Amino acid sequence: MKANFISDYWNYSYSINEGNSYKKGLGIIGPFTDWGYKIKTSCPEAGGETTDQNVIVSGLDEDADDLTLKYLYGDGKESDPISFPKNSFDVSGSSHSPILQTRKNIRWWDDEENQQCLDDLLDSFAESKDFPLPQEQSIEGDVLSVLEILGIDTLISKVEQKKDNHWIAYLEDGSEVELKKEDGEDFLKNLKIYLNSGASSPQVEIYRDKPGFETIFNTPQGRFARKTEKITDLAKEPIHKYLFHSSLERDPELYQEPVVNYLNAILKNHDWRPKSTKHVESVSDSEEEISQIKKMLMNTLTEESLDEMYAKARERYTMGSIDPRN
Image (cartoon, rainbow, N blue to C red; front, side, top):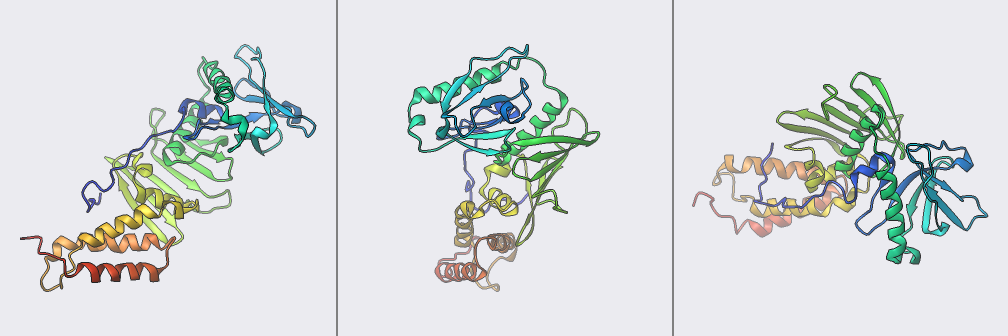
């Protein structure tokens, strides 16, 4: 694994999930940092299947002012239905399995009692599942755990087993996740993420490479391999977040600034003395990292702007370079 050239630079806090991870296997993401949920539901009125594993929604037809949420207990009994204004949710997905997302900047949700009403319903729904989940749900939970670590909040449409310890998860956004394990007790042997069903090669590949993991990022500007001690480092360290979102075409510009700051920090500490006077071995790793970070950043920045950044750093810091042996 490459060393960080700036001491303690990657001192970032990280939480595996902003909300309650146990709900994700039931098609619920949240609550988010600023409150809100994304809920996969079943709508019997549109032909959706009614099971005790789904939140059930009704009232989505054009004439209804409110939509109603409820769920089934394991014995088939219904919970008390609760109604919400229809305009308090954004609705997407299929008509029989719609996805509800709490709409932002709606006065209804400014009232903490209304928020608590939805919180209580979803908590009660999750707590009603007091029996073992089938194997498909366990595998779905494993896939969701990895997606959660990587910061992907897309729900799963279905999971298909290809062979022993080998599954394909189809996500609501059209992407696919391939998961392989060593055995039933294993969490992850390797995982691949494809942009869509027509993709011939994965955009992200994660392999267990003891004692850690190796990840291959296939970005528009090239293929980058990075090693991490833990899989959670893929979302913890900004450089991996940037590569991950570049590979999956998920607005990498939003994750660019910390990587630019890292490059500037390396440039500032680089030994800019002429080759004849500097200790080559001490800077070779730094030069290699500078080159690689510049290439990575070409996913969102032009080569000209990066060359200009490099030239300005050389001009600014050359006179300040000191012999590290002194």
